[in-house]
Length: 325
Image 1: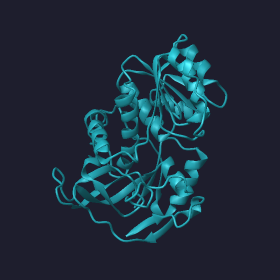
Image 2: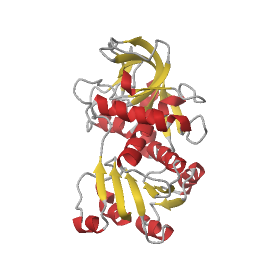
Image 3: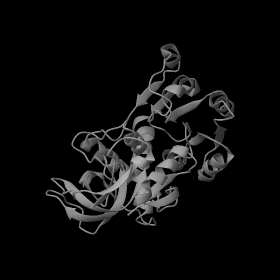
Image 4: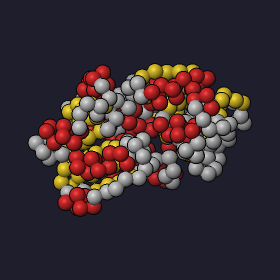
């Protein structure tokens, strides 16, 4: 089969399309014939040599895909060859075929075509697990979403609005903020021109955000704590702004606040299956109902993965970048 390989870490040109052996499903796994995959920040880090796949998993990038089931491994029930699915992956989406634990499969939602479905699993699972399963965002609360125009951000806006929360976002420039507003964002903050702590306080009569979903990490840590409301919850899911920062424990204690930090890729299979099951129960019905939709910026052939990575690194996109096979 064809797959995007990374013979040596580097820039986008490090992505090389090559012939590689076909995978075979083991116990509790299925083989998926890939129709499309999506580009995530984690793929860029892997290409650069900063985010190796967990031991024993596919060496190829790609943390989600859509496609059709080509074969079932021993012990798999509830799925059949030919089923159209999308899947949360540990890696391997940039390939013609990929092996997936059956618990990480989702049916393609009604009203979504097979290619576009590749934009859903990683964002939906990341947002639902962090904002709702861990931070417990509730109706009437305020959530601050950093990177509101990203794949994660566009999903977070829609899911938060669907449960009746108020949504504040940061994004770079009026065009991205306008797209966030179209998706339902209530408070629009241009991080290039405005201080999000001050803007959030003004918009909430000084209360702050009950939940902050952060992709930046160290650079925003102190300001995120300042932005929290009493009993606020800061969920860190990215490190684009570094990995080390000082934390004022006194400020955290004064707000009775909590800070959590997670990754999805390295979680045990059982934890991923629980997240996927929750997404199927709570998120999937919102899609045919028109309350949540995948946001796709552009689609590229797999052979043009390098160009898709260049767009990802330029941060000029809104929503997801897809690769088709």
